[in-house]
Amino acid sequence: MTRLFLFLLSYGLIVTTCTTMITYLNYTSMGFDMRAVMLFIVRSADFALFLGAVVLLLLTVYVRVPSRPPSS
Image (cartoon, rainbow, N blue to C red):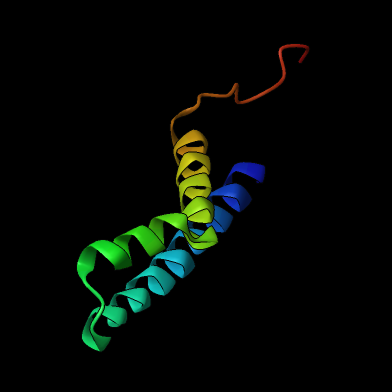
């Protein structure tokens, strides 16, 4: 149950932060060059949250855990 919760939490964070970072790309239509926009995105807190959520998602999916405690 914990793994399902962590999976859904990390997936939701990834979707939310990606949506926000995509909206930052609208700055290019206001005259900013792509390099400045990408630098802004990489320095934002959303990008750090995105990377943390990706790591959490990968750990949740790929780390093996025993299906039951060894004492039982």
